[in-house]
Image 1 (cartoon, rainbow, N blue to C red):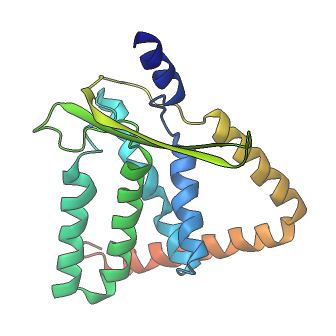
Image 2: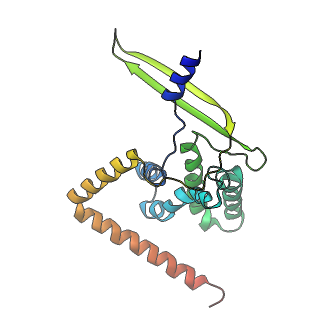
Image 3: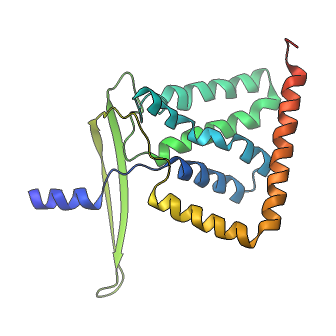
Length: 203
């Protein structure tokens, strides 16, 4: 029994996804479903915002709980619906980015913090082998574990580094398109700042 537990623990480690992957995966999803690329890129930094709770020694808790992930963004959605319809799209995109962070962190997240001082984890795994035909094995490990105080978060994992290298190679091949994309992103950000300062009440 102990051997089986050790094997299961080795097969289903509660790994941590790095901020680079948190940024890249939801952004690629939005681009794949043809959401406005300019707005998707503009709001993308929200995807890594929850990891700043590591600065307070409460990583996977303080900014990963339901209050900053769901309650506050949904309040903005409701406010946009009632008072500022032009904010609706941005509010929904912000909710998506923040929620995606917790979904990708389900290896262990204190979603109900500070009311529940434990981390919930949900780790599905699909294995297959070709011995004697095609065989699939689906296993799901879930439960609660003690909240670990963490003051640091790794920024780039091995998987993230591999994707980053792949991205650099793609940029090297498609450098003209990449430069055009950077110019477009900068133009969007510049226009956004200009709009903010035009509406600034204390100028």
